[in-house]
Length: 431
Image (cartoon, rainbow, N blue to C red):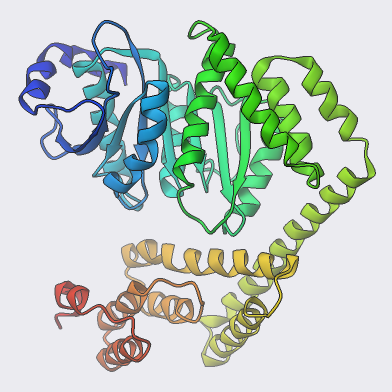
């Protein structure tokens, strides 16, 4: 990324011309370096060139820059971060995402007074994988907020050179991945924090993002990147102790909380407290429960993929896969919540997502019959997005089966999920 430093002298006038506002979101800033690139930008209300500021580069999987940067605004104002969030970066277009990162990086260096020792990335889902990938590639990112996904490779590296604020949700279909990644980071003693929020696979609440930005500042103090702020350290410690007080019935997260506090403050007293709790019977039982959930999810994934292998072989395979989805959906709709229901909900959501995500690769290979079968199965899942019905219709058109395309649209209409605006704009349905 440092090869773009030669552009430093030409950006400032262009930013001045755009009349950037302090203390509020600049919704769409056109890059002075690449006219096709734009981003939402937040500058703290007390921003000035008199000091150097930390920067966060944010990636949303659907290029939803405005609602995403709003999640960062409170924390950015409170802790003094510049925040760039791309309108161009999205899942499925790695070249475009890379161009977005290079542009934001360039513009941060060229237009503002920034602290290169405090460059951070953040992302959700596919945007999280981008944030982590850039942190590894540039070797100049001090920390990452990674929500709902981790590394782009199946095996995380043994050495992770940046601090990582990991976030997953109770209903996140990547719950299994994120728990496994947390254990890996514990094993390799990587600087990290792991937090779990309620809900499905999505950006966490603004309060969690604010906590992540606070945590990155604490880590910067611990690592000597910024001077220590006694008041902030005290506030951080008190907030963590309040969280710990509420975890008396949750031994697993209680141990994690003590361990993280010890690591963040470089205080062995809290680390020793975590070690004491690890010997308790309740902790061992909690670990077994979490391991049971992981094994159950892995088992469901294995069962489904065995059925999926038979889908391309004929109607009997498709029928068997549909019956399996139907039986698991019945579990999700049960009257009482349970560990098993949570496991099944996460798994079904993850399987539906994976069927839809493989669409791009099947389209690239022009395997339209296989694509149609995959999407035909995807619409059986209770969590599938309404736009998948249109994608299914387009797949049938491309495979030469216009009747099946019309059937897919009729099914979407009967379910009340047919978006007529999207229908009229979809060039894939023109035939």
